[in-house]
Length: 349
Image (tube, rainbow, N blue to C red; front, side, top):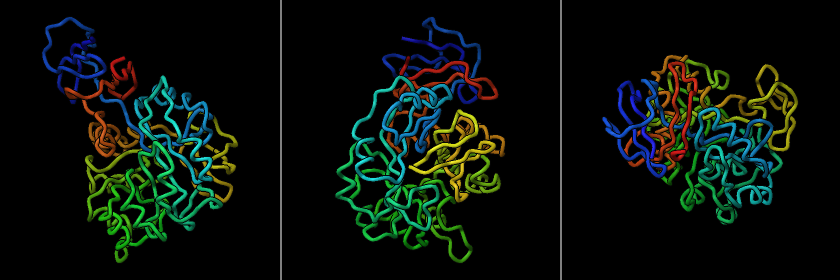
């Protein structure tokens, strides 16, 4: 059992009792404990879209614990290793099992491709792009989320029969197609505004459909993929309950500029910006805590920025994380006023 005394939670001072990896009591607790002297406690961050860090990529199929450890050091306590558009056999090798890592907990995989639009591939490898195949997809294990382009042949049938969370992304679909995809079961947009038609006043596309259908939106808040005014617009439109911050980090994250590989393609990182040789952005080199800080810098209230990287992704995934509340997993960060991590706890440890 662990008790944190005098913790600042959402601006209020309370004690937190933790037992067997769960929060069991919050309030004035008479048991002795660790006095953290008014330091702020927030939930551990949850990154639902990250490809890698510190020289390792999900598609490597090995050393994934290095990513988990890096994420934990930077405030992420749970994540979805995100794949790239590659051969199905390679995807099977990677997703066949979930490693039990010492760092951030893996909650399943996010399959980004191969069921995407060639015209919106971004940094994905066009060689492996194909139409959605639900039977093929069901041969894969441990997929928590899948990004697809619903306008492709077989797209709607795929969404209807898919048991994983479906996110619309790397797509050329129009408003009507996106709205239909949501009605069939899609729940999210992948890196909103990136790799999809823009929001046009006569052709609002998938972003307009997301507004009308009130689904979740993933947002890369690194100050590069989207202008700060767009970040603020998305926040004002979707709010902290529907907007999810993601890093979309790749293997160069935590390392210096140089030449890297991403989805079987060469990538150049210059001044921290990752691009393919044809100039397309290739993920980011930031981490989720950096995105939270950037959102605050852009004017989003601190606790809403935190919520968009904790409680909101947890609700989308349907996991008992992301809140400091009795019954929830004790994934906690002790931070200062600038969100610098002073200590962390995962599952009560």
